[in-house]
Length: 206
Image (cartoon, rainbow, N blue to C red; front, side, top):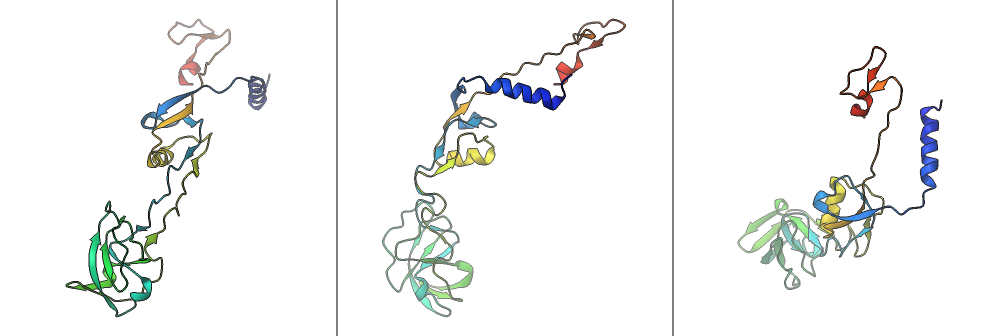
């Protein structure tokens, strides 16, 4: 009798001789949980697609926003807004988390570290260049492969696919598996066994 591992290796060896292509089909990302990708999923653009603020506060030139300095606030940028005009020297603009940082600005000062007096913003600590800004393309550049062929799709992977607009995914079809129980002592689970027989409970549990 073969051991489990010997039988497993024999099955793998025989299946490996079959040179058929893996059957694939297109499936909606909404229904693809647990399937295995048969295509690479690539980034359709830079991510983030713009320099993105990570805090509510003020977009500034870092060299101008030192401790105890103040700058006039000349506008506001919310998430989803166009970044508008470049930031003029000697000014700042109020900005919300997720909004595009205007050209000319190289840092965002958290609102908690400022004091507002009318249109004048007072800074209570120094800021460094790049602070609270995620640069364009720093998470993924356009065309970068984010999910590779052979990836099993879980919740995180489907979220990545949705982020890049890949809502139709080519996946491998799930294999069909047959279970065959043998033995003279086995009868169907819905049959009445003889004195020396048992019902085939393994097929049900497997």
